[in-house]
Amino acid sequence: MLKAIQNQWFSNIRGDVLAGIVVALALIPEAIAFSIIAGVDPKVGLYASFCIAVIIAFTGGRPGMISAATGAMALLMVTLVREHGLEYLLAATLLTGVLQIGAGYLKLGSLMRFVSRSVVTGFVNALAILIFMAQLPELTNVTWHVYAMTAAGLGIIYLFPYVPRLGKLIPSPLVCIVALTVVAIVWQIDIRTVGHMGDLPDTLPIFLWPEVPLTLETLWIILPYAVGLAAVGLLESLMTATIVDDLTDTDSDKNRECKGQGIANIGAGLMGGMAGCAMIGQSIINIKSGGRTRLSTLMAGVFLMVLILVLDEWLKQIPMAALVAVMIMVSIGTFSWDSLRQMKKHPVSTNIVMVTTVVVVVATHNLAIGVGVGVLLAAMFFANKISHFMHVTSTSEADGRVRIYNVIGQVFFSSADKFIAYFDFKEGVDKVVIDLTRAHFWDITAVGALDKVVIKFRREGAEVEVIGMNEASATIVDRFGVHDKPDATDRIMGGH
Image: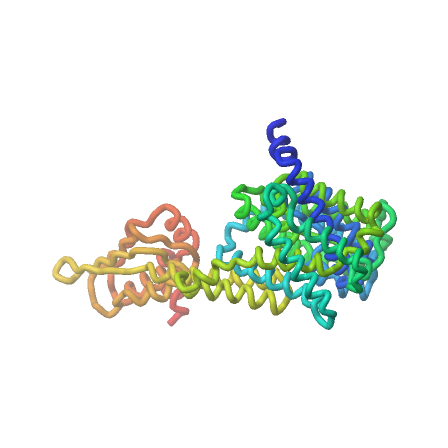
């Protein structure tokens, strides 16, 4: 127990504390921007980011991952806030948390194993593009100072790690933010700052129960939004956890993460914050800055509130160009450049899945739709590929009076028609033996195909014997098959 606490909390104290500061600085403009997207006061996003980060540090299943208010979730709240107001948003946030906890207990986090690598890669690349696109408003219709500061920031981020000794002690994104802030203040450069994003909170969040009627009508209003928020939040969190797993070569508890996200969202809703989830950009900033344990996530949340309440006057002077540079670094680091190099080597189907996921996510700005389309495409390609691994051979015995068919491979909805096409029903033999020793029947479509083959041969006057069926196939055939039941011919052939 003590060893687990040591590993998950105190095995990387310096790196986690410094990374937490960097993430906290990056969270402030993001949380404010997402609040504006959702149509609520900036305090709602900042309080949510603080509460979610602190709570998820204790309850989450992926140490070192950052969760807070996110753009993907904010986009789903717009209509609810516009039509019903903030109180209904807080109620929807609470219900979102309940649904996510339920998903954790139902072990829906385990469904991540059905998401193919090509979908994950497409998800990562799409997020990298969206992160970069989100910075474009800060680089449009601005003075040359902004471009100079952004370029200088990128130079610091990528070159500072090569500085002897100090380069490996202090995260370069933190150096970038501090250095550009000092330059902007000393030279009094007229440039957009964090202070231009909105007012910062001046108090800690307080307990706030949503003032909505506890009626079925209220439930029907918030339920559709809560379901969408829960689904998108879990999807983005689990995908981000998978990415952080790869970056750190460690495993995470996906079902615990589902529950943790739910608890964190309930906490945010009770403190006047909106629903949130894991953040790919900030999580990568954390990892790249040296954060590894739960302490880094906790420090991000704590430093966020400390910075807002204690150093708010300094924070307001941080140039947005510095944070843009950090986010561009995140975008470049997030994008899987190797996926482009490997496109010539990968199968065409893999490339199609990856590119389609990217295009749909970027076009809709909806991660759930993009990943859903990617998973569906991957499943279709997989089913088509497996269907080609089914083959039927035949031999003749007893002077041509007996025909033996040997079925090899997987018979299911995609290969069922191909399975039927292998049999010659007009051959005119006395007996047909169908050997299924090396075959497997997966679904009722496959069972229906076997029924049709047997009945057609019997209708042609042949005796049919099915042998070698494995136990799993026999179970589904016995349950759903009809070829050995009364009136089988009429049932299969529709009475014709």
